Image 1 (cartoon, rainbow, N blue to C red):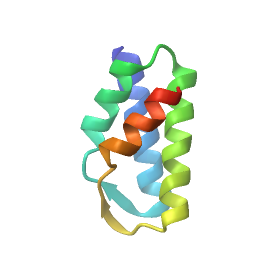
Image 2: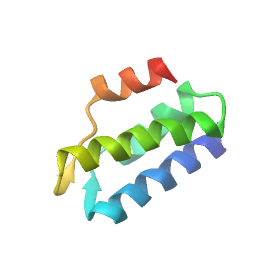
Image 3: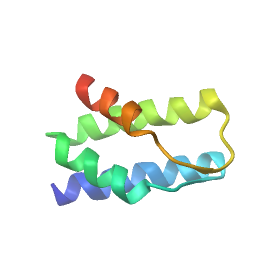
Image 4: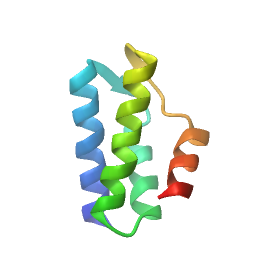
Length: 77
């Protein structure tokens, strides 16, 4: 589980760097993802979806990933 959390955190940091944003709840999101997935493929899938969400919405500055969105992605993982 620790590996999944580190992987999720790294993916979220890459999203931050790519779009010049700060994910306010990055640590919480990484922990939740790690608690709910079984493998690294699922981490990548969820983080890819989050990347698309940020890109489509054109966020700038600080962003909080809504729990409703995260739960929806986890339900589909």
